Image (cartoon, rainbow, N blue to C red; front, top):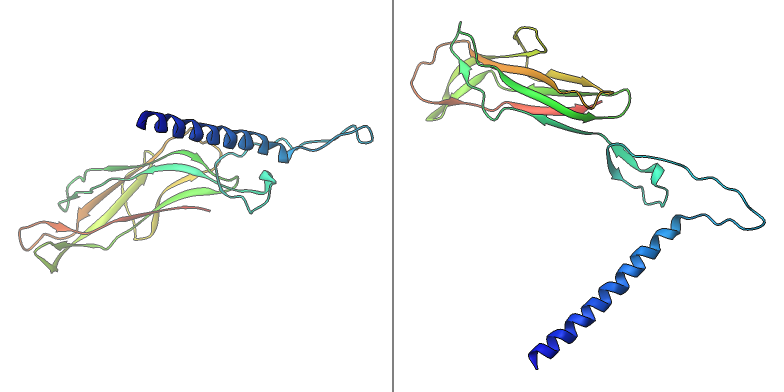
Length: 189
């Protein structure tokens, strides 16, 4: 008896899903224009939306949707500060698949404090200098909020890389682990 009820319930669910699929398939015709013997020609807008559709503004017209850019930015999880007067390790900041609106640029900026705090006592700090380079140049000091990577619209297949590094500006007074956070902000404007 239980198998019969299960089969019956399964058939009912299948029938309801089939009806829903039919309604969904026929609902697409709402966008179609009608031509008849009195009006034998018409036109349709051909469009393609490159990027990510953010908002459809509540109308059936898909061409008035707001289309935003898409991109992938990779940042380092950790940046080890080098001792003063030594060559620092360079960490990559990469932008790829940058498909953004015409006339705009993607910018990656870094914000940071110029001191690392001792984990055992946050009042104990050691200063450091953040450095960056884009392309094949050399590392140069950057201020907090500075753009370290810029990518102009128009070449979504390109991969653009910048390097970032940190160098201590003073020697630590106590042994231990000193940390702080560098925040990376991505904007398109």
